[in-house]
Image (tube, rainbow, N blue to C red; front, side):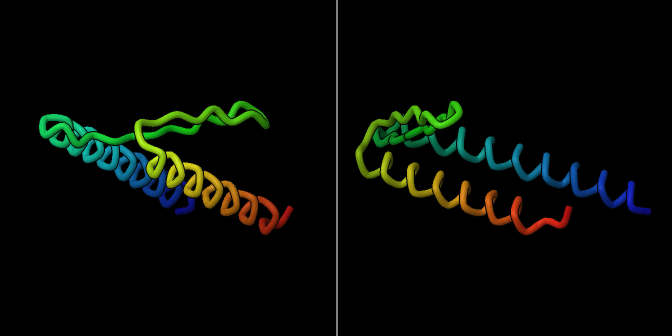
Amino acid sequence: MLETLALALLTLGFLVVLVGVLLTVLGSAKAARRGEAKGAFVVLLGPIPIIGGTDSDVIKLAIVLTIVVLLIMLILLLGLPR
């Protein structure tokens, strides 16, 4: 029972990520044709962030979202029983 639930959640998570990536790619391709494409990335290599992007507002948003995700991960990590 528990193994089935774990496999179902894993599959659902994979599909959600796959759909998100496809929607992002399609949206970026559509915006690129109009000349409105904006993007940013944040790569964390240990304590060193590597940040890049096409617009300062998009870069700020990427940094804020990265901090939010890191805080959620920290809360989940510290909140889980050992």
